[in-house]
Amino acid sequence: MLLLAGVLLAIYWAPEDADQGFSQKIFFIHVPVALTAYACFGWAAWKALRLLLKGDERHDLESYTAVHMGVIFGVLTLATGSIWAKISWNTWWTWSEQQLVLFLVLFLFYSAYFMLRFSLEPGRQRANISAVYALFGVVLIPVSFLAIRLAENFIHPVVFTRDGPQMTTTMFVSFLVCLAGTLALAAALYLNELAGKRIDSRLRELREALL
Amino acid sequence: MTYLADVVALTRKDLLLQLRARDTLPAMALFVLSALVVFNFALPVEESRLAALGLLWVAIVFTALLGLGRTWAAEREQHVLDGLVLAPCDRSAIWAGKAISTFVFLALVELIALPAFSIFFSPVSGATVAGVLLANVGICAVGTLFAAMSSAGRGRELLLPLFFLPLVLPVVVGGVGAGATDDPLRYLGFLALYDLLFAILSWASFEYVVTE
Amino acid sequence: MIRARQLEKRFGEKRVLRGLELELERGGFLVVTGPNGSGKTTLLRLCAGLATPTKGTLAVEAERGRIGYLGHEPLVYRELTALENLELYGRLYRVPQRQERSGMLLERFGLWEARDARTGTFSRGMLQRLALCRTLLHEPELVLLDEPFSGLDVEGSALLERQLDELRADRTFLVASHEPERLQALASARLALA
Image (cartoon, rainbow over all chains, first blue to last red; front, top):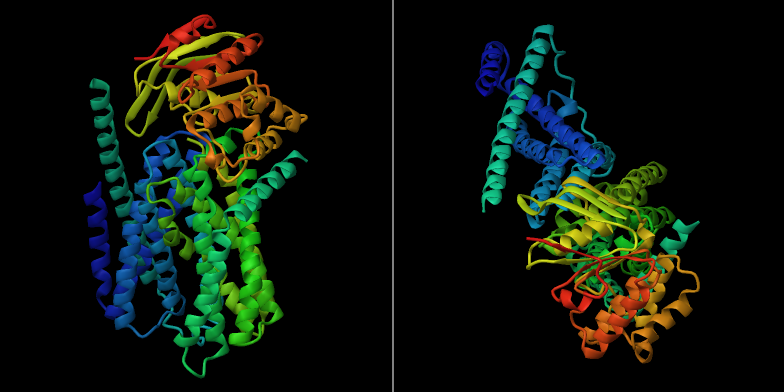
């Protein structure tokens, strides 16, 4: 499944660089990766909510893995974003520095998630706390976005750049495909890691039971 | 309402404890004053009002962090939290009691800090004061919850700044904006929104943070 | 009063209780024994509502305000006096006439002279006695005691035994102890954890 997702990305992404500039090409990775990171955090929050409301500790591992995925894709977003910023000259206004600042804030917040988690003893409380943290993270996303928007008024002068060319339908389709591919990649990595962690956990349980 | 009575009892307890221990409040007051003095040297000679305001908020946030780090110290070191959790009161009342007492401490410290800032740098506008009050609510609500989460672990309160600062960034934006721009209401409104959202979330989540 | 079926409590991968079956009727006095780490404290905490089971069911027919719990820690604030601590718990547990009740308990456990002293100055034995006051302050239906005799001197132990004897009727007890012989007369049942 993992391979399928990777191949999906590679195949559809390659033909599109035909007549686009290099900066446009980055766009096709950067944006899907960013959206995927958001999706991961959203999924983590959903699983966190399920944990708190249902009390089923299995959701803890799912939420944790999702946050892990989110952070990985977050790093990728920051990386691709800064590459893009260096190369391009802002043809797309909505995806300017705001996005990167937001991601930086979120990246810091979610990285601290791991520090907190590892400082806690395994058990119900750790699961609960991680879940609450993930929920706060997801609420923080729109709030920070708003904050950064508001901050633009006094941090940097508002820079208006001319709007880039409208996305043609073929570009839009290929964008969607890239998005789908990235999401699929994230999902595959997620399931893979989750399965691995579950097996790990099961092994330890069995070892405990035998002792 | 017994809920209110519980919150009052808990707030009273925290205020009484602070009165006896007399450690956090003086530390916070001294810190904020020292910070302002340091900033005086850190800022360029013709400092803009905006820059000074920004530093005020930095001072407030770090002072709050100092106070929040000690918020659950008694409960943690003396293992009393279990006692409170055992009681029939709603667990969120424990959070409310703590958040309110932290608010009081922070407000007391700001009562010193704001006039000091006005003297050292530039007069503080009404919008900034309103911003500070609103910001306090958000800071104390979220900070109390996350301080509890941090205290539960081995790192104790040392990890608190890591997650507190990203969380509190919108508050700083709101506060600085309220004081610096021509449209303070928009920023104050934003602070109110932040407060509402995060206070409700903190209030509802506390129960889960203290049960095993 | 308490019914546990297939009760399991796990901390991460570590299983502290597994497949526990327990039935304690109202008015019973159950003594739980077992080596360190066998889960006595965990069982008490589960019954008190401080922890939730990982698997299985645990039904406790007493609401939180009617349960008294004595753990390994006295659960009192060091900067407050004995009386102030009990006053706080009295408020939280909505104890009627809390001042009188606090005073009476302090007297019963020999702490009346120390009532206005900050508990930070108390000895281990005094803290244990104060913790017992705290546990019984609200006249609980269900009393959970985790090694109640630890830290008590001869006089303290005698006081406790007398109190347990007096309170025995119409109250349910679940006591974890390393010295079950002390409670032999009171016990209606025993549970040994592996």
